[in-house]
Length: 204
View (tube, rainbow, N blue to C red):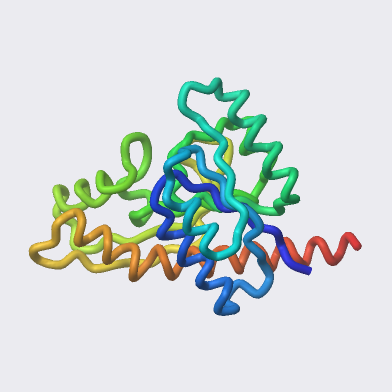
């Protein structure tokens, strides 16, 4: 029995693309991506989903009260009967009340080795800029469960990536994506999907 996966995105969707490629290559055998949701109507990730035959919807966040936004998001997740949610570059903040409804069912990817360079203000290139400014020699990416405590959540997988002389934030960002994010996220999706699938089989 397959676990039904919804992927939430805000931008270009490169992590989504690699989840879809992994699924098509059979590397997520216990899961099936059934929906892509973006809070940004202009997100190219929705086009990526369409290119792979995956339904995509926009649930706008800008100018919408949090409760209204999350109610609309919950409606879409219920409609596709999602078992788990993957935040793949999803920039909208989810409330503790929303997260509480998905215990150990929401995965997030962060472009650093948590607890380094995480928390408020650390996203996208800002993470890599901070790593270079601090002068660390190793960075990486982390997949973690999202819980109701801000910046909290149990770490599921991490992978280190070397910082090289002459790196710019953009070059480092690309290396972290290629060597860590695009590797870890499908692995994490399969780990959680397999666990959910087992639980679903026990219930039946």
